[in-house]
Image (cartoon, rainbow, N blue to C red; front, top):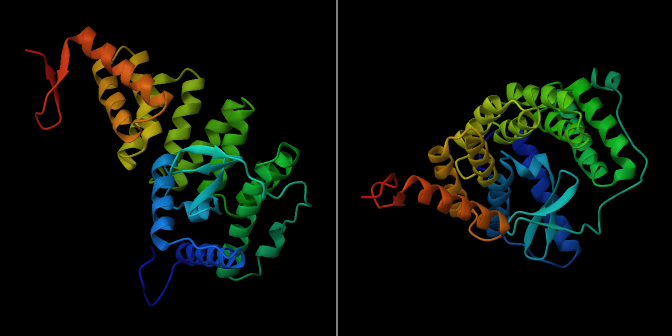
Length: 283
């Protein structure tokens, strides 16, 4: 997952640390998780959530022979795209933070490590309603010392989104897209809040950017199809309904996407033919 080199970035060191901790926990539990399974789980989380680096943006948790990830206040199994009960989540414990002044005399490596520890702690605090306010405080402290920390911007934005504080959520999501223009999840979340604010044209553009960055991002295709349909652009919607069905062929959302695609093809007198994957009018 990380190529050998003479020098490693802070991000790569963070990944190595996360992998080391996973191995240590597995040994402690007398369990084994293969490198192939770890890679498959990480790849699945990247596709499911539009993340660049799930090992750093979430907390990875071993579940049997594969990984689940603490994300958005829940434990997510990316292989099945199901939520799971998290019996090991820490809740209600004292909030431990490092105030901004203490960062001034620390080395860049120390600051990066401390911010990462704070972020992982904030993710855990999000999982319990009783500690949500502490999670907000932790994210805000992270942003005070690292304003461009895109995962913290997104997670804090999502807390405000769930509280229906859409203007605040939009501001945080936009900051995340500027901090990391290659971060598909930031554009996806921005699309969601713009949709809620009835700014459908801008929401569509945000979803388009998300699928351009991560073509396998199923949820972004689904929401983009919905946005196109609401604008009366049925044929554009069809492409993304079909893509969603291909990426996520099982489940209620897939059934809905398949039904929408059938309705459009019937109404527009279209059929799917094998011509470089493009749709043509039925003859």
